[in-house]
Image (cartoon, rainbow, N blue to C red; front, side, top):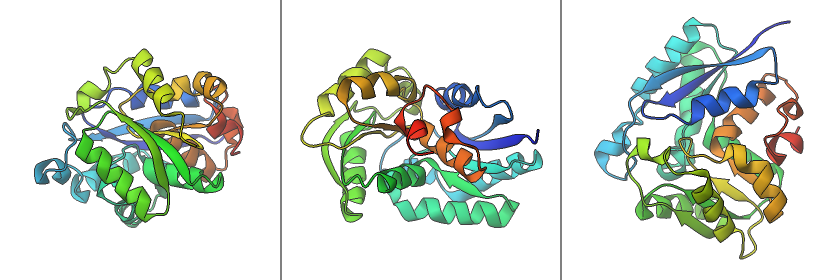
Length: 241
């Protein structure tokens, strides 16, 4: 059986996306995830914080993955949600140009999932500060999508996002599951969410689209692997096969 090697660009202070990504793939015997880090420690709208997402270090990390002959390279991060969706498309194009490998990202995958489901009104959950959250809401408004409810933790330190517990994520999701939201988006790949998807979807009656899971979903699609094989991770995988 041909191996499906999935390379994942990872923020350096992130501790959630790696175990989550590997867990999602655990039932797909030919698939495995491989990670390459670059420095990200703080999420803010300052010039210094945004400079963490300049393309040069991301491309350097992608080249290391290319050494291991990845079938896909995914950026498991959400910076384009506040910096602009076009940045992720430019990053994908550059990764492919530099490595010859098709690329995808969490944010572009989330946007594709919203489009496939014709979702125009969604609820947003993140660990970010108010100004970052506002920038995300504004970017989606420009794209014609309405954030009808939101909850954020008000944190800037990237590592600290991983310490938000399951019960707090549940509380935030329950808070925003109102006002006509057609889905909940968890926007952060260092925040728990994916493993709660089936539980919260059953309770709240709407899809939960997690950013860590979204890039895995897209990688499987690009590798022509049936997403339904990632069982137990919510409607994202079972209904959008």
